[in-house]
Image 1 (tube, rainbow, N blue to C red):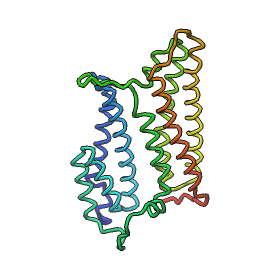
Image 2 (image 1 turned 90 degrees about the horizontal axis):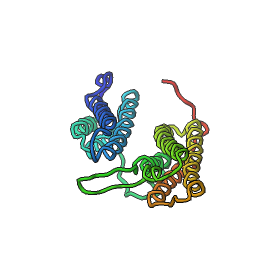
Image 3 (image 1 turned 120 degrees about the vertical axis):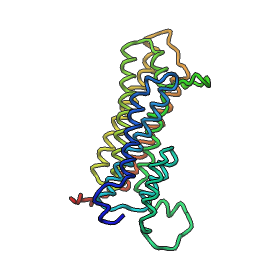
Image 4 (image 1 turned 90 degrees about the vertical axis):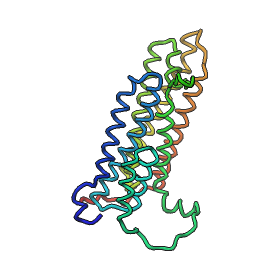
Length: 268
């Protein structure tokens, strides 16, 4: 895309925006869908979030100048997840751009990958953490008789209403904080700014405290209700959230490792 076409947004970006809006609407309306509503809602939320990240990066590229690799990567993403028109438009736009570098292709090695992608490791770990925390909620598919009993099944089996309310709030907090964390990680992967590392540390600390409070509910419940026994959903919920917190902590550790203390924001 030359400078003249760069003055206005390309058609592919409008389609990417429309894709994000569509999946956001599906996510909002998913509770009204019988049987698979929860599953569609979670899947839709993840796709809407990922698509939204793509739109943000496309806007950023529009300001700075498009890169062939960025358009190609997002084109493949939209194509793989069924957004055929958006994917084709992005791939078509990328094909019009010249190669960013002219060099002899070297064989892939993990050492080279690490050298050029180490600042993105916190983002990759955060994505895994978010998928664990937000992606494994309870759902049921009656058509194939499949059901996942997770966080809310564990909460519903509690006898104490106060502990139920506390556990429910902690689940909400963990989901909200993990989504904020992924946006912060996207920003860090581009700048490695100290501000993003501080935010990541604070979010991880709050998430760890929320998980501790959530686990405390199930530890204290047997002392409050003599008839209470642990079900499989309790163990599943605690393990899933625990793994999500561990990946979030690992992300924060790598953020501190690759922080750029000399980072200065340049106003455009």
